[in-house]
Length: 186
Image (cartoon, rainbow, N blue to C red; front, side):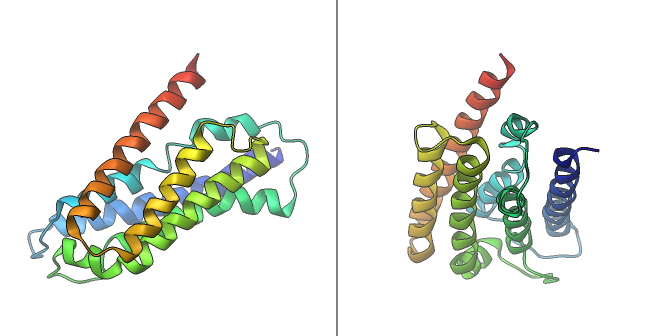
């Protein structure tokens, strides 16, 4: 097993834990013995957090031949799935059977959105440090701009702004990553 395969096993374990946590939250909120009230904005963020582990997957293969792995290389690669796991944990309340998920999102937003902004910075850092693509790579400015949007959402309490931000970020993510996967497939 080469270093890249070993590191990808670690990445896969962390991402698997995050996806399992997210799916557990979704299923728990659908159970008949709960009175969870779903919310559209919360659902959009759940879809976004679910899509994010798959999105940069194609880019990871670009570093399969990375010759030497330093601690900082490892950290830059592992930080993204670690932050995605943290978002999965923050996405649903712990053990509550009576929760309005829209209210919960606004309650946890002061912690959720800074973690997302940190995730955006981690993606850019990982891209620059491992692939060597500075801001001229099309993905880095998009991710950096998304990070700014997430920081703004941390302090804005307006629910319409949160809805617009959620839709904008989800659509942008789906468009950018579908383009990236299309380019990688050629």
